[in-house]
Image (tube, rainbow, N blue to C red; front, side, top):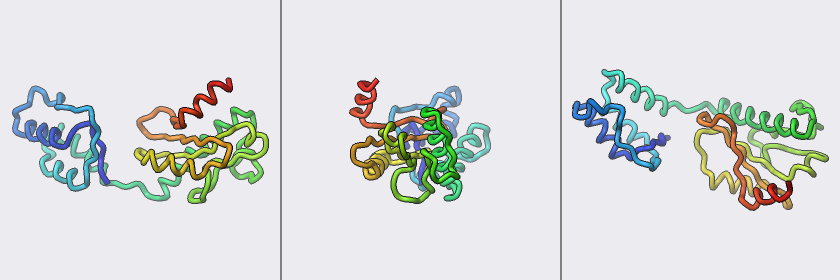
Length: 191
């Protein structure tokens, strides 16, 4: 487990040391930043925590953020987040086709697969399957491997259909859609 930060570890430690030693007091909020994201290991996070002594408001704020990283989401909570995104996608697609979405109805034209089952996350039937050429993979997580998620989506996509990933995270106000460029061109030319 780690944390992504928009700062190199060396620069972060340098800034923390400068702040702790009072050499950078006037620029407390102006830390030296880089344009690269890095992932800190649990050991690196602990090292930073050891440098910080939560005696000042600034230190306490960073210390609390670093402590939150150690907390893992429960499997049941993660599955609940995923299920909520799948239901959201089903409801939105149902609105596009002016049909009802009812997860309890096994014959519903749009259905969310149960967590842990193989295949696509959203099942389409009848006219919707014929009209909506996408097989959808949903990810409601703060971080994920894009490459492995694309491979998963491609594996689950049936012949003659396009894969689509719907991704949601806290920092985004709305879920985003990820697809190949040729799929985008197909959609553009179709309209």
